[in-house]
Image (tube, rainbow, N blue to C red):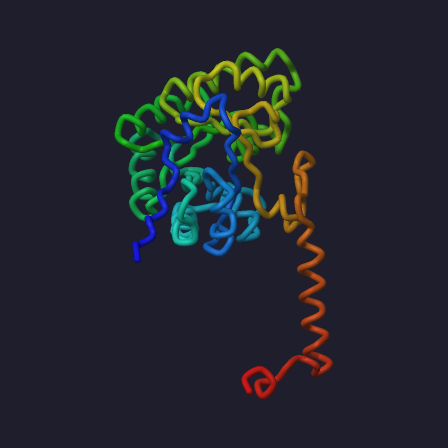
Length: 269
């Protein structure tokens, strides 16, 4: 009886080669069970710093720590087999200097085994991206609406409403790609601007609240399943599990109070 061949993970070059090809599918995951469900359907899984809000109840991504990202990255790697895993670098872990970014990115990859890291920022972060890539750290970029900068932006605001700002956003993406990022997340920008960015760079764009013409798409899994409290307007709910989960919890609670919950003698006889 022949042994089953091990499943090989999708690699950075395979994602990079998808520019203009079959759209890239991605979702976030933060736990091993969710990663196992997402794995067969995704080209890459993002361990996003959105876990601060989704899992830990934080008001934004700003309070997420490096240790939190590593812990959840380890869980997602254990739960997945096929999809490449990308881990977000949290706020404060890379902005100070390229050297700081390398130390923390190397720790993320070394302690989780993930395939790449993602960091936010355009032109200003290009030297840091180049520094990391030159030293063997694969980097996914992130431009447009950058959640770690919402204090500066004044909240989660769609970017590119003023066409006069388009050139700066496009330049951000061009500089990130030229610095060596193998793909670029384009978040929360007007559709025509997202299309311009996709046309302007030679690496895949991954849209979220951007354009269907991006080379791929990503959503926060809990938003897509209807499990989040506040779901962005651009998110289509492919499931409505929040109310169903609450109904199941209420049914369980009622069964316990009514003493209609199976006892040990019923379950194990």
